Image (cartoon, rainbow, N blue to C red):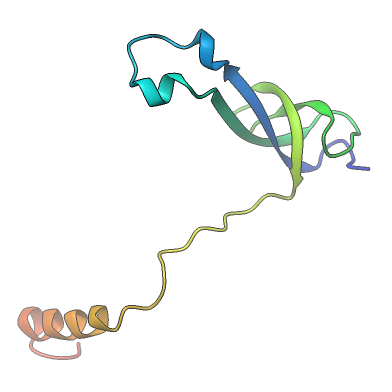
Amino acid sequence: MVKKGEWVRIHSVVLKADERTAKIPDDTQKCDLEMWTKGFLQEDAEIGDEVTVKTASNRLEKGTLIEVGPYYTHSYGKFVPEIVEIDRQLREIMFGGDK
């Protein structure tokens, strides 16, 4: 059970594929326009339930509850040794060393 007031992520379909404008690329027209939103749960619920959340900007949004305590999982990729060498070279050119 997810309690009212928890920070959660919901998913909703804004427009079905057949409702989208013809002024977008063909491959895009074939896809639903989806939205993932984070906010504070407005009622107790279970994952998969249709719920309402209040966003950080105080908007109320409805959707399917998909995650509790969402957080960013992206990165800038793996270490690239060449970047360290570029940093050294730039510091030498700009400042005359490791300053």
